[in-house]
Image (cartoon, rainbow, N blue to C red; front, side, top):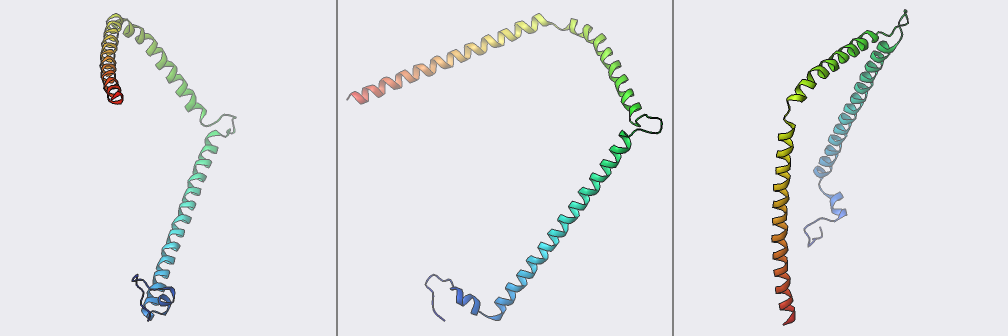
Amino acid sequence: MPTNTGGKADASEKHRGSGRAGAAGEARGRARGAVSRAGAHDAQMDLVTAALIGLAVGVSATLLLRRGPKGVRPISPVMQAAARASTRGARWVRDRGEEAWDRVPRDEIADQVQDYARSARDAIDRAVHSELRTLRRALRAQARRVAR
């Protein structure tokens, strides 16, 4: 057998190797095929499951939205009840919300927000002035180095 300096066998050596290597390769091929078949089966089952779920949702929607013998949709009473409840809830919020809004200390909140904005503006101004001062010093030092 020829010796290869890289420690790797060339293509002809791979195929001429012992019978066990060929058998192992075939076993791996069968194992990969088994995994592929199992994956394909899972994919098919996922597809069937999705189709069944879609069918169930479609049938449910059809039964709820169709018109019955009296010409009324089966979901109409539910929708009407939801509309009544939302109207009552909106009235309740309107009645109680005005009282709650009157109790909110709007002037104090406005003053506090103005104070926060003023202090933030001052902090930003200080940081910018400090940064500008540092940059000017660095620029002067660089100009002195270049001038030499």
